[in-house]
Image (cartoon, rainbow, N blue to C red; front, top):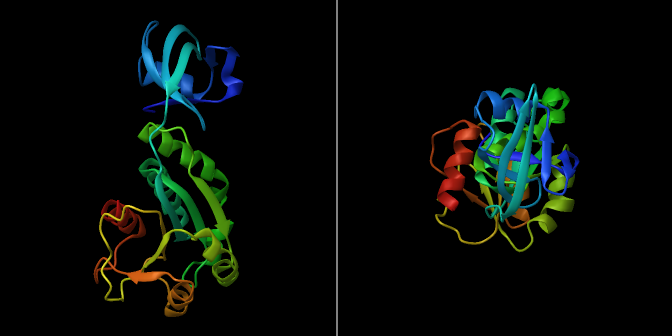
Length: 233
């Protein structure tokens, strides 16, 4: 944890926090903090600052905190992503959260196996988002939504969601090169490995999305995500 995230329930008075869960264990065992040590802290969905360790007991840490700093700005980016394989889900969400993506919409696609939607890991999404915040020293969680039906989502919701942004769909089988350093809000659609099928690309293009590519090589989704975000911002 590069930042200790807190909620209002952690406070025992206006400026004092007592932790007795995995955060306390991390402070004791990983930070090896002693009384008087100052650590980065932040309120989830709020300000960041410093917390001074004022007592350490068995399994419990008490901090005096002052949060007076704004968190880093989010990227003006919504990622619309075909639901990845469960074993990749945790890593992808954590990475997008740490990169500062504002919103993630996980959608269905022809190449997404139905079993993916039954994965118990979907119930852990908020935990993965928080891991990304702790990595990046941020306090504002990425919004995550699930859309299990491709066509109704694209036809009925995506156009309004992408309103006021540049809509791009990453696809390996087009000639349009992905732009660089786009200093404006984006909605970026990314399919499973191998890309969306042609029907899905056409549906996205019908609502104004431009199909772009990073080249002919087929890469893992997590690799493409990092490449695209680094290139676009």
